[in-house]
Length: 203
Image (spheres, rainbow, N blue to C red):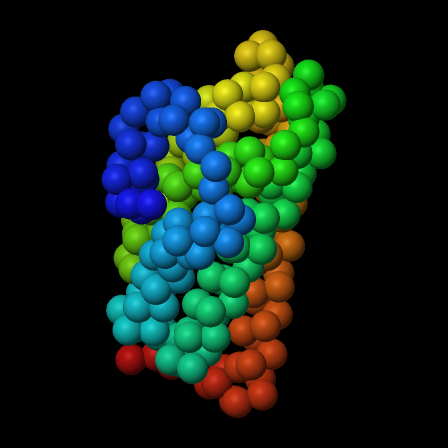
């Protein structure tokens, strides 16, 4: 699988690419390891560099840089949870399918969850400069559009059910996002407390 080409086609011509994806057979391991992992790593690495090396400017105070150990722990945690989240999201997509006239299919649901996350993962690169966070928000909206386009093609639901189906999945995704943010914060915070890394890192 050519990750770059697949991501490019999903971003530039999603309707046509979903038709191609619908007919593919891809194992869970291959999808997560060879596509989801490298793309999810973009945001994790960018966030680590942005937080620990570039830092965040605080008015009248200076620039705060996350201690490297703490930043690395946060990057690894966010990467692992990104993969867990997309897998759980696929379970939700599959479970909801019959409620919206679709067909349950775990393989197709996983492809949908992974590939519709492409815009958000690619936009994770802006985490290197927190001031560009608005672009990440726009990418998140485009991910929802990708989901909307992919649902009827992969889960076989009637197209007129896609808007509500999409909203239901997005609602669950928001809850998952809140849980992931809380877990990431707890893990990083615990590590910081244990190492004394919560000392001010202003430069």
